[in-house]
Image (cartoon, rainbow, N blue to C red):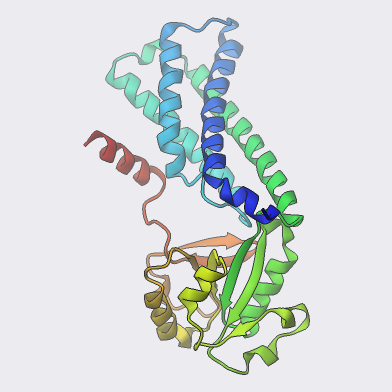
Length: 289
C-alpha cells in the first residue's frame, strides 16, 4: 500500500476519531470549568446532565459547521471561526433547554463562560496539532490529493506553481486540460512534465481512472459556456469542483461560496448550501420529524 493511500483509505475511521475527540474535549473542559469555578471534584447531578446533553449536541452541531471536511490549504482563521461558532451554538442550545425546563437558576454563568473559553482554546490547540502533523506528513508524500486543472494558460500555471510550492497542502498536479491543442508548448519550468490533455479526452473517464479528487477551473470569463458544458458532462461524477476566479462571471458565482486554499481564492461549485446554524436546525428537524 502506498503511503499516500494509507490515510485516505482510513478516512472514515479518522473522522470518527476526530468526532470522539471533540466530544471528549467539550465534556472534559466543562468538568474542568466546574472544578475551577466551584473548587469541588464531584459534579452535582444536574451539571452531569448538562455535560451529557452537550456531548450529544456536539455530535450534531460540529458536523454542521464543517469540522470534518478537508481543511487542507485553508487558513487558521476559518477553522477558529468554525470552532467558536460550534461551541457557541452548543452552549446556546443548552441555555435554551434549561430555559424550557426552568432550570437556568441551577447553573452558574461564570461556569458557562469559562467552559466556552476553555473549549475554544483546547479544541483549537488540538486541531492545530492535528493539522500540523498532517501538513508534515503531506510534505513527505503522505495523503496527497490528485487534482486536474482545466486551463493551461497563465492563470492555470500560476495556480499549479502556487500549489506545488505549498507542499504542506498536499496537492499533486496530475494533469492539465485545455481546448487549445498547443497549450502544452506554453508550459514553463517544472510544469513541462505535467501532461496536457485536449477536449478529445474523456474527462469523466480520466478522473475515474487516475483517482482525481478535485477539478479546478482556471479559465477566463469568455469560457463560461464551456465551463457549463463540462459541469453538465460531470453531473454524475463525485469529483470536487472548484473555480479559480480571474475575471469573475457573476452567473457562475451566484449562490456559491468562496474559499481560500493555499492563498488562492476558489469558488466551491458543488458544496452544500446549508451550513452553520441553518444546518443544525435542519439536522434537528430531520431527526425529530
